[in-house]
Length: 349
Image (tube, rainbow, N blue to C red; front, side, top):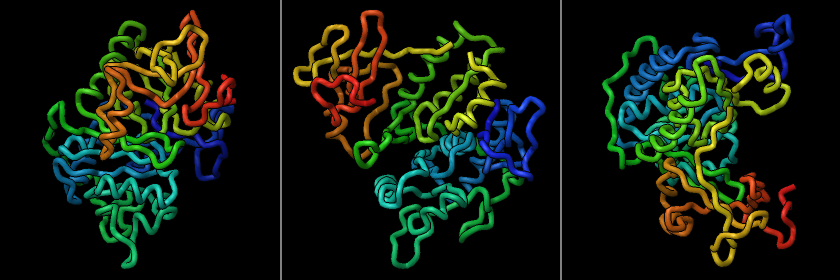
């Protein structure tokens, strides 16, 4: 597993460029920089176990929410696995939102513990490090890349053991991610054991048929995406190397993809295109609302049952997107339904 982001500019304190010009500098995990940037799954699992001990030591308990709000890296996954191990509910929040949006999300979640880093805490001081004039929405705040920072120092991972697993039932809330927020305040997405297993299951079946242990699976996802959680489980089950990219800048992604070339794409969800007004299927090539169906469909929006009911369409989920499907099955995305311009099938461009 190559578990770090590649920076587009080199730093004198980082590794120099390789002789082939492939690398500028690797950023280790904020949670455990001493582990370097190339990890195997066993080492990563051990890190998640010790991190579970850390979360328990700072007060996270079964059934409570642990918000993970830090700069992108694979340690977000380790923190989520750690929270799940002790029976807590990891909630992944992107660090790119403004203070007002982040405050709304934390108010909905009411986390007992929030895990962050210095960069995010500095950008959102009144949210994560409130004073007497601001409400404490983040619970106990742990800063992973500055263990002694703030009122709650982070225990040393090397001094901790992995606590015994406290699994939740398959129908209970297991994790929370969120939508992009392009149409307003992001919705918080609820995942159960059933829904995440559904996502992983179909990917594992396809992966075992199409991939070998020599194939490379590359991902470039926001740290708050559901696939961030299900994807690693899938790749571990298949046994394939994972190139985890968290910087989409071509100057960063290009060298990584050149050095570790990814293998086949897997598409294991069904999509239909329906008329925006009637809900009936439209002919091939005509634009309409995009509905999806998959074993990994999430459980709904946290705290918004009416919106969840509105988006469910008899076993299908209304994505809120508009697009068309060719006779050969090629899906063309036009844009969001709320931005639809009648007669302009390519208004996204």
